[in-house]
Length: 80
Image (cartoon, rainbow, N blue to C red; front, side, top):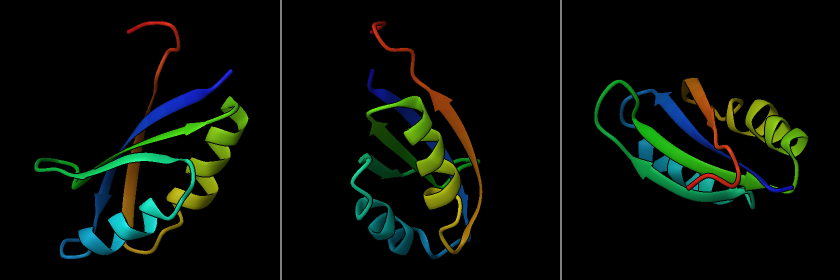
């Protein structure tokens, strides 16, 4: 079953565009937006499985240079 998550990203100021471009290179990335507030960026990722989603967030997104922290909100499938 496909799994999706919204990722709130706190990055170093001034590097938002660079990070957006890196995120857009990931095939799992559906949407990426710059935001105002406690988090600089909001991203949506979708994968085939929950395990792949966790792997993508932990090993690919969180390891991008200039990302300080993330909060992940996993979407519940079938509710919209």
